[in-house]
Length: 308
Image (cartoon, rainbow, N blue to C red; front, side, top):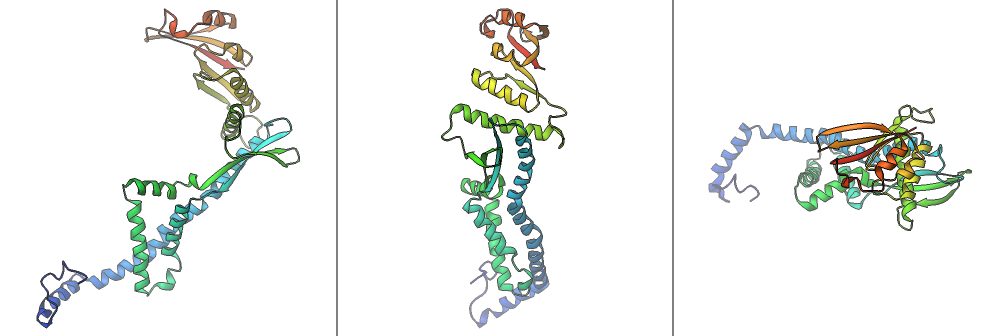
């Protein structure tokens, strides 16, 4: 019996007809046929409006990423990545198989809805697919959460390639990941793309340098080596940025070539902070090659540096 709870008092013989008639009367009183039609109408309308919209958003996401990367590539073309070369970011589709299966399910729910308007069996089949999808989307199981992320996080539906082009636009090298690259090459790629993205955000379309290009870096290059520090500062300078660096008295000899002013910030007993403009000679003398945490008169000591 398909509805055991509703027909628990009924028997499968002529003697049970009275119970079946009472069930029929209850269904008529509850206007089940009317609500059934309303259900199919809503299934058709909501499938087109909501499920169709979700599928379109997922499908169009890679195109939107390409459109957003295009102006960053314009920014990258203005600054050489290496002599005679500029960097270009290419966006390629890379949709996971589970995400494609999810889109296929959405397509099976929404495809040719009007053609099956009067086909109740087809409508119920589509509802079963919709019910399964919605149940999985709302599940808190670890496997379903992972599935949901792969389906809905469209950042996972693309991959990025870094192309190095020469002056004629010919690709002479490419970067799919950091594999096979030295640490310095990987760092340069990351900083270069970061600087290009920032210039895109801060500069008007026709400007070579940002209208407002001040960037504050706390604990700047605290754990970096000399080579990376120089490379990063050269890149930010190339892109037209004005750097404001806060560093715990490190890399002073390197930073001196890039900054136009220095202030020493001290904090007495963790309660009373002071900023004092100093010369480079005073900064180096105060540093003395010692670790700032060993300074006896302050609980924290930081050099605040401003580029020209």
